Amino acid sequence: MRRVTDAPSVIRHDERRVASGLPAGSSGMEAIHDPGAWIGFLELEPGAASGWHHHGNWTSYAMVQAGILRWEFGRHGADGARRDAERQRATRLAHRDLRPHVRYAASASKKLARGLFHAMARFGPKLDREQLLLSRFVGAATELFAISATCSYAQWLLNQGKPADEILSIASYFCRSARMRIDHHFAGTARNADKRGYDLVQDLLAGKHELLRQGMV
Image 1 (cartoon, rainbow, N blue to C red):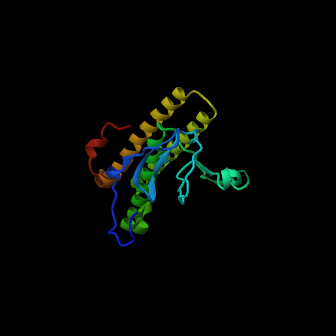
Image 2 (cartoon, helix red, strand yellow):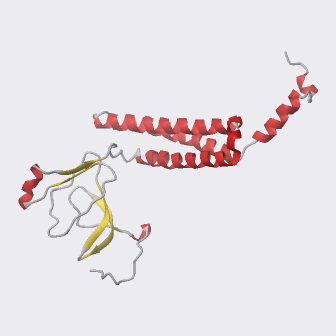
Image 3 (cartoon, helix red, strand yellow):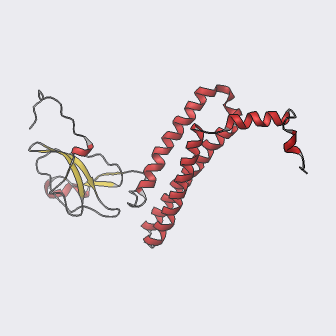
């Protein structure tokens, strides 16, 4: 048991260990395991439940990232029927093939917000004149919505018992394609030829480049 006077210890991601002695049907990584505490991550497949197990005299805490936590407590768990400690998030745990796309959408959404905020700070009230830049932000946002909607609908179909191979192959292809388009939009916000294109258009409107107009109908 660590004393309060002990120096703080930092446990990094690569220092976590594969957990052992977990309930049946679950897997996870542990960060701390000593006689006084167990701290780590527990994961179950969508639709699965861990086997019934007892925590003894340990005080238990849990943070639910997705799915449902149900604790039965009291003598022989008798209080669980009347007083379920149940918490459910709005979103269900996604299939493992969909999780990378969901995480990408979450990360890219934050990147989009930062990019738009930076553009607002850079251009101020004149941002509405940067139509090409705004079109890239709109394009990325549209694709992110499409990824989120695709993953959500695909997970709903899986929960209904539909063929996983067919659903995941289509959803994964669309999400991968959308991610490539999003990356292209983001790249265009940082490096583009918008200024040169604007200058060229102004020259054309001013009557320059007469040679380019010859033969035009």
